[in-house]
Image (cartoon, rainbow, N blue to C red; front, side, top):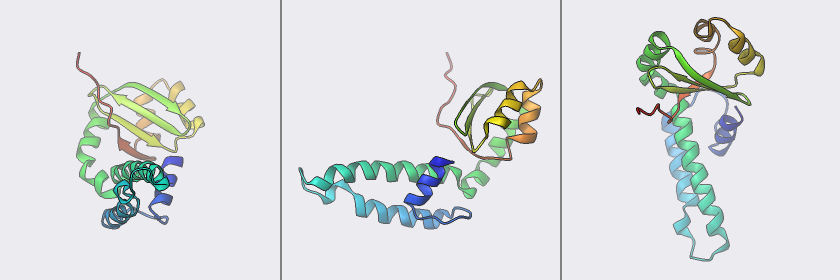
Amino acid sequence: MKRINQYKKLFSIEEGPLDLKTLKKTYRNLVKEWHPDKFQDGDEGQEEAELKSVEIIDGYHFLVSIAPETRAANLEEYTNTITNSTILDFQHKGLLLEITFQDGATYEYFGVPKGVFIKFLNSDKQMRFARRSIFNSYTYRKSKKELQEG
């Protein structure tokens, strides 16, 4: 959640659903404002602009990945994974739960409290618990990490 809030603040997004059109417009304006090429070599603002532009690009791609339009476009694939695949591996750090499925897909779930994770961990039917209490209860996105075929 901290990451989501950090990027929403960067893009001046108020509470409510993300709008991709507005996000793209804001992204373009921020890139123009912070583009490193606006500075001469050695200018004191060039290094800050380079760091800020990387943050802007990362933030944009992250926010696009959790936007309602993106989730709707990928809903069939996500539903197929959580319905027909089993959990292969998972890890919880802070409020982020990352679950890797047998089909190779990995999803990140944001805002999952430790208490819910402990219940998930101690459940004798983790997939059932996750279907009921995690999969559609928390903001999620498909992670870039994929299983390596060996």
